Image (tube, rainbow over all chains, first blue to last red; front, side, top):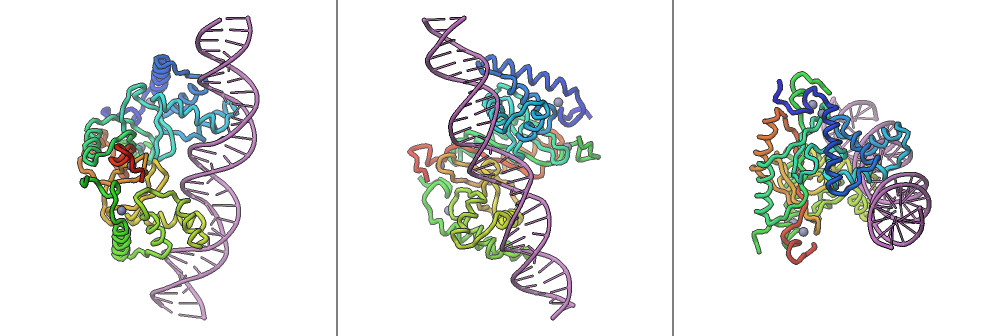
Length: 163
Length: 163
DNA sequence: AACGAGATGTTATAATGTTTCAAATCTCGT
DNA sequence: ACGAGATTTGAAACATTATAACATCTCGTT
Ligand SMILES: [Zn+2]
Ligand SMILES: [Zn+2]
Ligand SMILES: [Zn+2]
Ligand SMILES: [Zn+2]
């Protein structure tokens, strides 16, 4: 099959990483935000796959790097990357994933495979619209929206290429 | 105003609590699930307001009760209550709130006021439908859905009855 | 009484995230 | 180039949230 989104099928993932880093540099340059080595390294690590990583996972890899970092180092880098729309935190996983719409101001949702752990980020105008209608009906002013759908990706549903 | 949902305006909240406990007894009876004193007490505490409580908040109140409980006690009660559709966990807050659709199998969403902390649980067929469409388009099989909207409730937006 | 399943108690530990203050680095105007 | 001020990073301690493992209790059944 080929209509599947990237995380669900083999692809040239180094292109994903390269694109993400390039976008990040562009975004940061345009905002006068400093993509320092630590921040860039954390972003690169997050992009090593489409599976979200926890802060302490990142910390462990940094330790392998020989970089003796403490938790605040990672959390600060993650804060920066979130502020600048480069990564998202997945609340239901306590983990972080690279944003596929770097720099765009967007409301997105995540399809999270409970089997292979890959996450697909999507923007879904229909969902956003429906949510806005609900909020409006309750006179509620939305600011931050978390939409996370856990389930099975196409690959894991039939057969199960668990990776 | 009066179109506002319960959490957003003064109301006879003890009726909320009473209803919740009554529903819980009914649901548990029909399922042969045992609503033990601890479980009922935790449910009652969660329902003391429309603001979600953390597990350790509950633990602290139990301590005041004179009940010297350890974390597993509370987490086990919460697990039970979640299993039986009596409470929800709010992932973005690491906290728990009473379910307003006890026993019904439902996909719900939460409007979370960042100011007064009250949470409104809603079922929104339009949102659910839109999400299903998105999932289907990606050949994704949804199982658990987390929808949490943080923002300002009507009360806090104008004036700010922060409670 | 003996048993077994479910529920609770108890202790320890894991996993995630924050506060605080000091030191290093960068920025920018002079 | 220089130095004041801001930003970033280092480091240690701590806070919060959640689970693992095993012992004990409760209560209905045999
Ligand atoms: Zn990729
Ligand atoms: Zn999968
Ligand atoms: Zn109420
Ligand atoms: Zn409010």
